[in-house]
Image: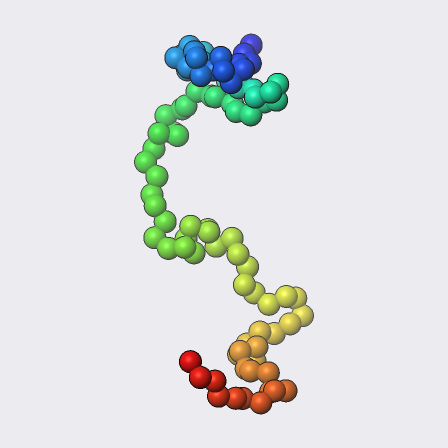
Length: 91
């Protein structure tokens, strides 16, 4: 049976909470609302992790930069807006 701990009790009895969590998940509450779940670790979760070599790898390629369906984004979208004049500015 999963035990529920008040945050102050969890802090005061952390060793007991950890021992209990080795057997079954433990819930920690703050102001009566569940805020954390302490669960036993399995050996797979102890495997070393490899750091990403780039920001793209860290994102996992999750961002889609392709053109929306029905549009063609070759190099045309890189051209400047020709409705306005080019003007010099001082830096």
